[in-house]
Image (cartoon, rainbow, N blue to C red; front, side, top):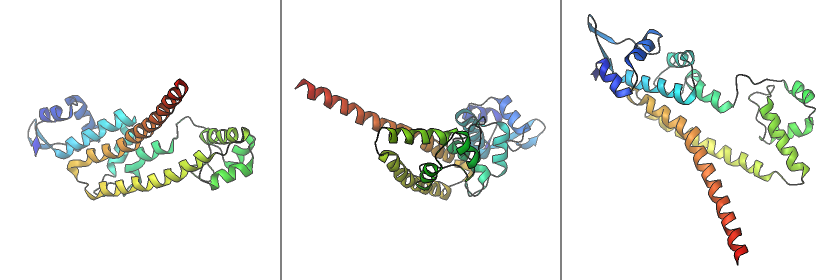
Length: 228
């Protein structure tokens, strides 16, 4: 379908000035020119505006990041790393201000046990983004394991986290494959919302609520037991 810009504004809740700015910056394709000062937009504009809005509000992406991603937009939805870059950057847990170390620098700077670090990497408890790229995020995991060891408790829960995380990752990849199979220009922004909301909102909600319910029931049972 074709739309006037006023209809696009109504459907996306994005001001006319912002839409024109996105076109000027190359984030959106130009509108179809009917005649002087008369332009028409289509469903692709609506989906792309929704995508841009979502990436800015939910993921904090910049215009340049979005523009680079959209330059690689294609029907496969996932064949380009650039399209997935915002997702991959978030999953990596990297912060722009993070300091990065080679493994040698990491071990020496924080005076770490190389054997322990190597074991944790082997067991997939430590997962540096690359073989020679460590940050203080890895350090926090090592300290946690050291605390387990200090009090003489096996860090079984962390090992189980790895097992379940790997299985969950397989399910998430299956979800991505299914999303790719129904990819159209008309549902582009909806598919991205499904992916991001599942990975960053719903997963956290379900896992944390399950833990909350288990802890709540445990406390409730303890109180009931003491009252007997």
